[in-house]
Length: 393
Image (cartoon, rainbow, N blue to C red; front, side):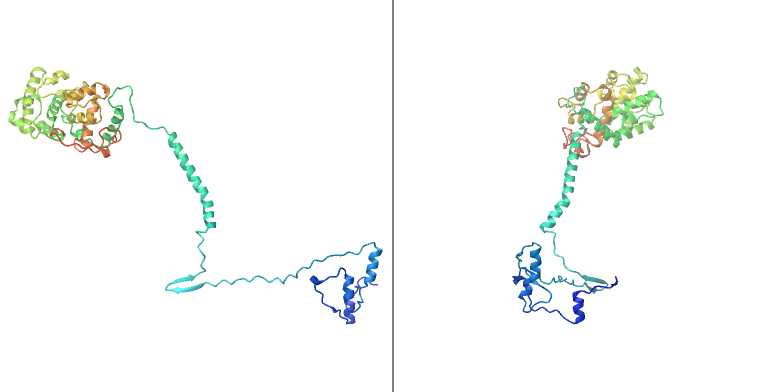
């Protein structure tokens, strides 16, 4: 027998003969009570040609296999799987509106307020919120750890106000940022820089005598008129009083000051060789020269610090800042109170600082406290005063 010859199966043999196997009875599995394949043959109406139940059972008995009773559970025949219906999405419709095209889309329900969406937002924002809280805590800790800048206090000075040093620092800062009339037209700016030292000292004294209760601009203009007439002791001695009064006007009390100048130049010519005294005691002895003028003249003319020059501005600011233990009524009382505790190195500076500060910010009437750096530590902050005297200028 050839190797390539295929053996015909039973189905092929029957197909060649033309025989067709047809079931004699349709049996439903769930109603089947048969326990073996032989029962199927016996249950048929005709004898099968292909199964021998007897031989099958005998064969099993010879092999020692007992007859098995199998309980077959009835199972419903699963229905044919039908593929799920796919809903066809409505095609997008385009509507032309002028030059624009409106596209009609499927409306999606708003899910922003749904619990799922809210929980998702919370989960997404939780790390950000925690990070912001941590950042705030870190900044708070940094601020607490930063050294606090306390107002400067000088424990070595027994001042009426312990914050006096911070007041002074702030006034210096404000004075550096703005120009006051005293900076350009003060008494130290009135002398002729081309004149000799003796004449300059005399002119400094004359400017101080005119400045009492007079604005710096008025004094400066009067000094220009006097210098045009060659201001010196001998010139004033030879000048008639009426002419001198005309040159001094509109200086406050110009007639009295003209009289004092005539008397003073005579003393300087007779006693000091047309120069001025070099000590405050003798300066105060001159007609029309007070303690303030004497100490300022010593600082400007002789470059010597002998006391604090207290005018209306220094007097006013010292009381507002509580630099005096008790309120004072006169500038001389303020000078005595300040010299008791203020360091000597500041005596010459305090007059120039306070005068300019009093002319620009801490004015006699309605001081500009909003722009003052001492507004938080000044005992008289936001103080509004009424004009009392014409002398408070």
